[in-house]
Amino acid sequence: MKKYKLKSGIIVLFLIMLMSCETLDLAPLDYYGSENFWKDQTQVEGYILGVHKQLRDRDRTYWLLGEARGGLQKHGTSSTSVSLDYSSPIKDKDFSKDKTGLSNWGGFYDLVLNINMGIFQLENKIDFLKEDDKKFYLGQLYGIRAFTYFYLYRTYGGVPIITEPKVLQGVNSAEPLYTERSTPKQVLDFIKNELEKSESSFGSNLTIKNNKGAWSKYATLMLKAEVYLWSAKVITDDQSTSEDDLSIAENVLQQVKGNFELLPNFTDVFNYNKKGNNEIIFALRFKENEAINWVGYFTYQTGLMASKYFIDGTQNADPLRLKGSGVNILRNEYIFPFFQSFDDEDTRKRATFLDIYDKDAVTGELINGGLILRKFLGIINSDGDRVLADDIPVYRYADVLLMLAEIENKKGGDAAQYINMIRERAYGENYDPSLHAYVNADFETNELAILAERDKEFVWECKRWFDVRRMQDGAGNPLVFSDKTTYGHGAVLSTGEAHKVLWPVDVNTLNMDPKLKQTPGYE
Image (cartoon, rainbow, N blue to C red; front, side, top):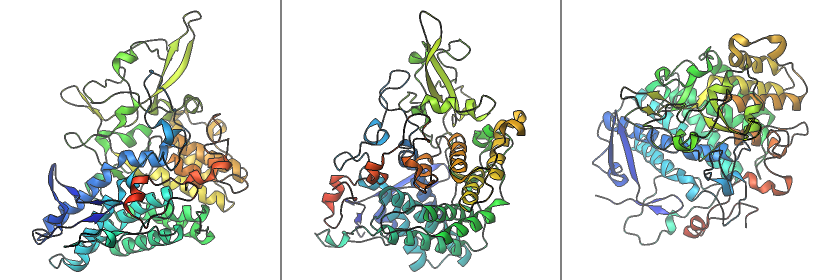
């Protein structure tokens, strides 16, 4: 059997975990590149499922990159006196070349290299598939590769572009695997080209498998809209903005618009028993007896909850019935002023959070408000245990509407029409247009209103940091530098630390590849 060595910042012999139905089959990657594999469609299906599993396995990384540093996270100590995870340098934005908060490119190149293997086999080796099936698999793999590189691009700017499963046979030096960082423009151009390949490969095939847990043409279209909206608004080094990209993003969203819908009830979107509902476009799939999400780190230990009070003055050590759900400890927490920004009539407020308090010993007043996440808590199973197995949406119809609002605002049009679709669902039977409807205003006011809706709508859905990076104030500056976005906590970043919009590369990764250079500003 040939031995394949792959580069992902360091040289690794990677073990891919392939998922077939409810079981996992583990084997070394060189097996999947050998003559022992790629024999029939069942193996190809298994490989594609394995790639989706790797995609899902990065759920925490997506949150760290897309939300943890977005300005809505407490750092230091939680409301239950537990030390909070990722406090520094991620949540407090205290990055340096020696404090990177993440290593080895977030592990994304392990996924990239397995995607590369699948594309190589489908394009060059496999001859037993029907052409339509081959194109469907390629549409998925090109789409997931574009998705992965878009995370890398928004995180680091220029990164190494690797499109082939690199092989060393009988060579002692790793030099052939060294790859320098491409420029941000080269990376974004690559991502756009990947999207075209994915879209073209899918053709008219709109199949969505696994209760929206499999990549589809609609997922590619949503990613394309997000990429082109970003490209229309964000400058990164040699990558300038393009007004034409705004029209492309809008046109793509219009293709998606009529095929999904807002569910009438906000909580139904995340209901374990309603997976793959009409609002979901693509989600990371979790399931009882297969895999659980990591929302337990946003909840509580019953012993620490026993002394807390709720808004009605009552106490309960386990109000959310978390018994049996695994790790439950408040290691990550949202800031309380964000919770206070919700109207009480907004159903998202307490569908998303459980608010907890201490009681003043003298006055009896409730003080020191804290937040437990109650979104994505899964189900109580037949044994009476809670299973944290809700899917995590990557794209859903609310995102279509709020991206269209953002595009309309950039065009100088009426963003309110889309904002109010979201608000009407959020307030439900309490919705009163005279009280709750948004009235179109100037660009910055609209942009902040759109951000506020995105904040309330997408808690824990890995979008907040990217939102404040992409969205703008009246002068066209990113909202990441605005003190109007964090509910009294000040700007996410100061203009004097603008280089921190990108992440530094850890020293070990740099040392393993002499062609790599540090992210500008961290040298």
